[in-house]
Image 1 (tube, rainbow, N blue to C red):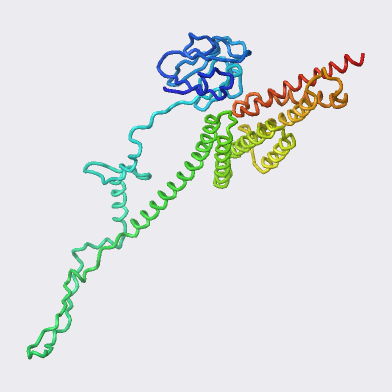
Image 2 (image 1 turned 135 degrees about the vertical axis):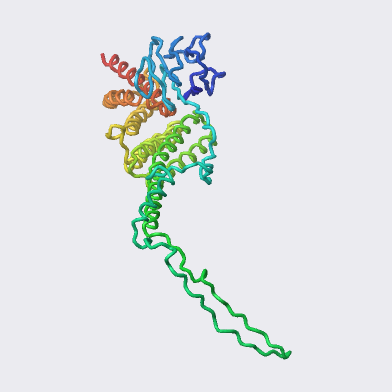
Length: 426
């Protein structure tokens, strides 16, 4: 089966591999890693990387694709879990060391698509139409015939009934005209065939077909409702994943504006979907994810411009938005992805403010207060905890991943200041 592997963060890749996307097909294995002889060569420019020379191999299995770790140093992760050998599903999030990918299966269009109405046609000779209750129409006819035989109203043979006597209107009278000639007014005579009672559909048949029609309509309506609710989750999940896959780290204001419009539209659609299907908790999780994607862009802009107050406001505003969204994970517990991301971002704002004010520990004339250093060092423990909790979620949020990396660098600056002040006090 044909599949595609899409790199979700190409910031560390060489210029020639920006937007890396690989098609998997055929019955051959595809080794991926930094070695040029691999079927999938990953050319990484970064000085440090967690991708091995022969990191993993994609191989065909049971009409799909599997992924096996080739004893890499930093492991293979699928949907946040470290694996050694696993069969992949469409939409799986893969991380090879520190390089994120999305795996998609390209399914061919089913033959005859769009021709579903062809089955609503007249039956030919010798054909039977299967029914929900009686197997086929002819079987139903026999059953109804047996039922009609028991009804006393139809017991008397038609031949014994006397036809009614024809009734004629009175003979027409001559009507004189101006020309002296008489015209005969037409007389309507009703014959026996017109006066004969019309055959009526037996009561049993009428009731049966009414009930049958009601049952079929009810079944169609119920089935349509179930199918609609099932499809709405898949449709919205695909829309969110497609946005994540197609979005790219950019500083282009126009691209940023287009992404924000797309996210706003997605959020409105998800709100409407939750109203239509309130018993689908997956929709709440998807809505929370879209809200975090919107936050990611606002937070990145504020941090990039040095507006630390705006960055804190973005965190608070996002928490208020998420408070009104019901989000439950697959096991029924609360979905903590969004809250962990926000909690991880809070220390980065404090660390960035410190780095801006005290950029060089060698300049003792503008040194931070020991109490301020102690507070930042306490934040360091919480920062590490939340950073670990959101490690795999960052595949969807490349801007936040970069800001967390910057936060780690700022922590090292805090530690250098702490060491410098300790040495100066001796």
